[in-house]
Amino acid sequence: MKKSILLLSSIIALNACTVSKPTAPKIKFADNPVVAHRGAWKVQKLPENSIASLKEAIRLGCTGSEFDVRMTIDDSLIINHDPHFNKLEIEKTTYAELAKMPLSNGEKLPTLREYILAGKENNTTTRLVCEIKPSASKERGKLIADKVLKLVKDLKAEAITVYISFDYDILKRIEEIKPNASTQHLNGDKSPDQILADKIDGIDYHFSVFKKNPDWAAAALKNKLILNAWTVNDETEMKNLLNQKFEFITTNEPELLFKILKESK
Image (cartoon, rainbow, N blue to C red; front, side):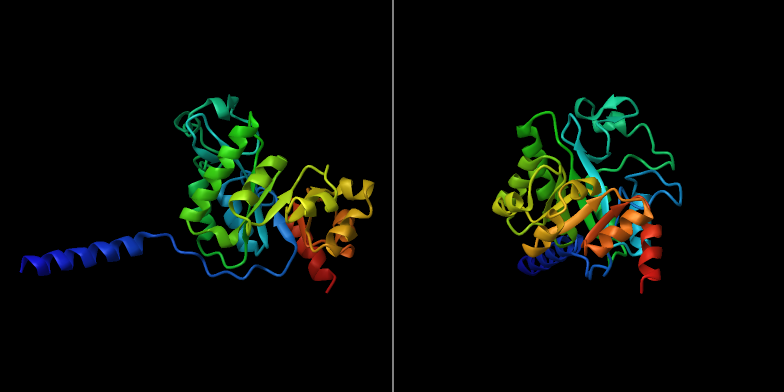
């Protein structure tokens, strides 16, 4: 009798563990180049980098929604673009202190865990484009990369997450730990040949960089590198990049880019 009770308890515990694990979303990325920069926030007047702006990007059907990751003094991974939040330096402040101050829509400053979980909800179209911001030191930057990769894995979001950074060492660290991760460099200082040699997957440069280096877009396409440009908010610039067959265009104006794409059909 005791053995039966123990066996039943074990089965219940195993089932409980199985149910509680995060599951990977079934997703087929949208067939468009639209990456919402810090989410889709402008038209709806939402806070940038908020869960609301992420959900709006998913609602619009963007192929990607970009967001920025930083780490607090107590090693909390949070979503914020600037190194300061409400005049507090993020790397020298605890998350509890930062979380006391809500975003403009009343949202709490999101953690990366909360952001990823929100990004998996009702999402069948949209990549999570995770920008890991440079840190105070190269070693801390690598530590942040390690922690981000672990969390993404734990939350079963690897299939929908890509990584971008201005810090080349962060990208190299990601490739070292997870060679099949999708990585893109942001800084505009590396040629496609160098990117290819260092086994980074693509370039995501300011659109002006491609004007200064007019052969780079074609070279990236030839070498099957990911080709992305930021932050493109002008209709003429969008059309120019579309004509050059850019795979992705990162923009604060996703609705405008969708309009251009619809009109070009």
